[in-house]
Length: 518
Image (cartoon, rainbow, N blue to C red; front, side):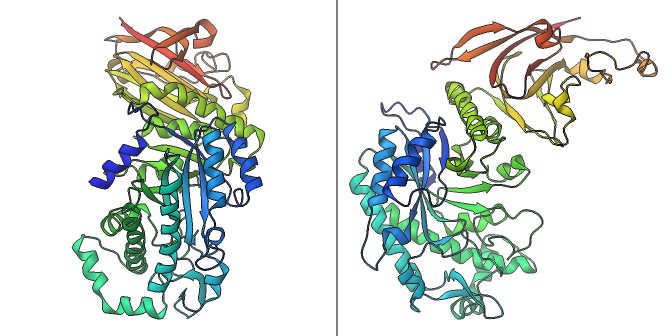
């Protein structure tokens, strides 16, 4: 696909033209953080200190076109200027006709003018949502968006702007679809049913209305994307608020670029390079996986800034062929959260030369309820767990645990890097694993009570080889991908050769070399 190739051409950036991948280690500014020159001058340097390399900044229609036909790009220009000074890339977020479903960033002159009709519920209640079925709405939105695109082409000669998001969390609320006069006309024509059938998309009951609406949102966005790409060769993407917590269409921003509607969005908005999830709910790994599909490498433009952000970023790069990760409102985060992000991003910068090659890697992410992952690699069984599954850490008694995570990178057979925070990793051969007996351990790491496992003795003589840890070294990954030895971890630090571990609160890279014995 031409558009997908365009995305890769621009995500693979280097000032020297070396095609080294530009990892997006991002922070999206809070919505009102870049609405004045003074705020921009203050907030972008502030988030830069957290170790990001990309800042996501709203481009707000109401500020860009305060009066119809009169444009002001001063905040955009200042954003680019300060980002260049701070050596950051910029992703602009077009807050045009819709932001979080609503038309709250449309200018006042647009909101007050009956030329620009609103979406309605089935009961005829007008919503603070411009209808996607109005040509007048599209032309006004398109005029402002294209003014921004032409301005970027003129001023952003060094390509500080990396990508552009079209609209924000587009979708209907209160109703699964728009019931305005214009929308009902299209609905009654029925052509949309044939369009769904042509792509093999089936929707039943309340999801049928959402599928109808999704076609027209996608077509609207596609027109903006086509016009933009005639002027500037930048990747374009859309983002979605998740349909979580068992909500039904109309209770979440419906008909947007949601995973269950990806067939519609890919068909009717082919010039959009990426569909991206905004993840704020629990179950981070599951939401992320839904957006890593064919012709859609994962990009997370928004994730909650919290104590778990750093390990979620590491997991995202470890588990997926990701374009990047960004947390939301880092400018409002407390010091603990900012430090968490800084540490996670610092590890990712270290690991970058290994992740851009052909080395196999696995993502790890554990919480209170999901605390184990088993990986089959090189005839070894690699069991990873949350550090608080160890019996001797008193913090494990808390009712909820901070998330732990990171990644395992395969360097060679039996040769691995473990990077992250709050992990414990043990190793067995395949044959050893099949004969394994679980023992309940006490706080000293040995059997909790004498003779407790007496009845569980294996009935057969052990056969085959066991996995042993040759060494566990704490290392640093150098820019050329080589490893710099820091220290050997042995004895108490690897439980006498039983596992490799990284304490909760530590951010480390461990080099583990295995061997087998019998």
